[in-house]
Image 1 (cartoon, rainbow, N blue to C red):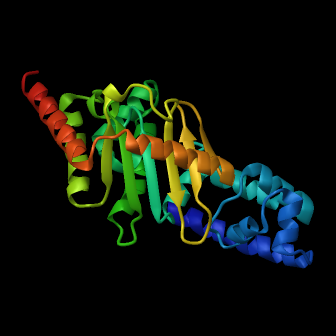
Image 2 (image 1 turned 60 degrees about the horizontal axis):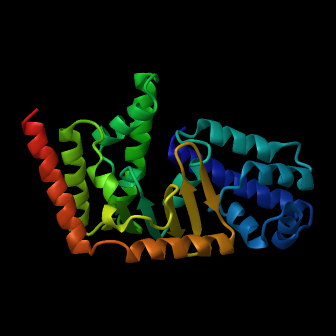
Image 3 (image 1 turned 180 degrees about the vertical axis):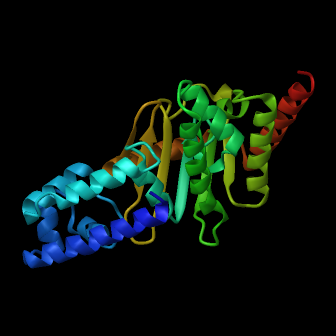
Length: 277
């Protein structure tokens, strides 16, 4: 299902939720209390801005006595999403975020990946999948990256660990082109990138990637991911902890200028390696 079609379905979900809630004479706050979320979140669901987790949809069905329509809708959208079940909501939130702060410990973030790099990452993690699967993953990743070219693109702050710059992914040619692409994004001022050098040693968020997203009309969220799963954090206390971790990472990085020089130098090293192989 195309992202635009998915968005239309979520908007329908929100309209139907409002209709069924009002038919039961419940306020957003009253429904929120019964399904263990805030009334503000119910409002965001109804506007199609936020997407409820499956368990929340199930509780909404129970309270509003809808015969499971909300659960079925959420399951359908999860099943038809090109993303892993734990990531599909994150991909939607990216499209409405005003600011994204990301930390990548080993792999260049998806929003900055070139098609060739994305292909190499996908195949490395899934060596027995079909070519169709690989193409779907690469296409969905390139579709996500288009938000950086939008006039309304979010502020995008990225902290790369030096490993993400130096660990080869694909051929030296692929890696050189990937680093050149990051340099281009920096010089076009679409992203601000800094690098945590290996010499720092232990650092905050050592167990995976971290992303914090801010919005105009809703609280910030944080997302953490390891190799096999991801967690979207809405709880204000947890988001505050994630923001503190990101702040600690930021003070451990090289300056933007030194980070750019390191990325350019690494790109040249990979080009030199490509010429000699």
